[in-house]
View 1 (cartoon, one colour):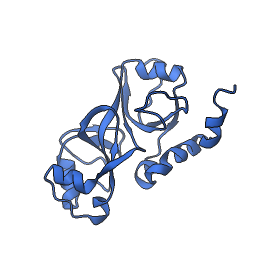
View 2: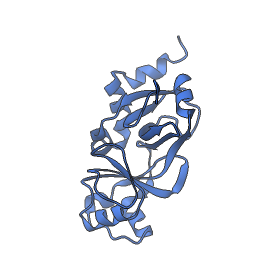
View 3: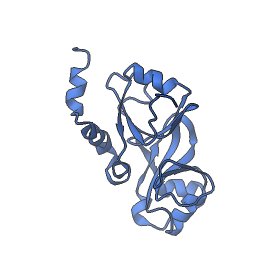
Length: 187
């Protein structure tokens, strides 16, 4: 990679000036970043659909009442009709991108079938769609200060309510988000 930053397993925090409506006020988890580009999942935009409704759509029974009420998330503007499952542990599924030794992003239905049966990964986060960047695109957006980045904490993805994830990621950086938005443009 020669001196470029690899942001795999990092959070991207949209700066308050972010004009793109897809990414305003978002926290994105980068699952893969290499010379071909980057792939991420927005993790703080729950949509008006529960896991229960999603599982009904794909004809998979879901017995776990706690999971049934959990929201599905908007993962980004690409392939919004496809489900993407962030999960830990990694496990062994048909179509998984291994993000780390512990974390995977799976697009195959088998992981959801396992979740429905009660023998899926311990932690699951389900989104529709993902965020994609072509080669060099994320780097150029970073150069324009569109994003703040911080090493990801998986507990924040799985253990913190959606509306608290962005402020929690800011705290990883030691920044108070409310102060940040006021300071922009007054440099």
